[in-house]
Image (tube, rainbow, N blue to C red; front, side, top):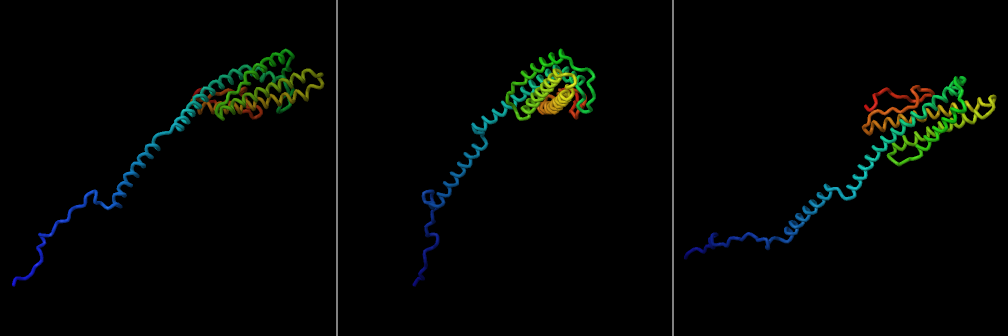
Length: 231
């Protein structure tokens, strides 16, 4: 009798590779999720890399502000130069026509009524010129307001001197001393502002711009540092 044997292995059916339709549902869902995540990541990356309309508007506004401030600095410097040239006769005249604010020394050349009238006209014009105050950057606004305050202070000093001049000679001294101190305060206020004006010109690329009322540091007033103009 022949021995029973099993079917040879070559007779067994070969298993077929699963098709896409036969892939487990979990693997299919994972693949779809990965593709979706990649698409979302690409979208977010594009949005982050591209500036929004708001960002573009802010950038444009900042550029306009820089341009406006650069123009204002040039205009304000020109105004300061013109003012300093016109008020220097007043500053120098009051210095020699009033008792010294620091030592109390008597005036070397007393102020006349004609001089006071002429100087009042000059200061009235300068006060009017400095009334306009367009808004700019903080640094420029500080310089503009400082110039206006110095002009107003010098005007007050002149008014005080005129009031003293209207008094009898033996009653003028106390008021003239006040006028002298007011003048010195105006010079000091201008010198601080001139330093600020110099700095904003440097920052704007215009180089040094020195616009001081005096060349001496009377009362601690700042003076030009000697740097070449425009450098």
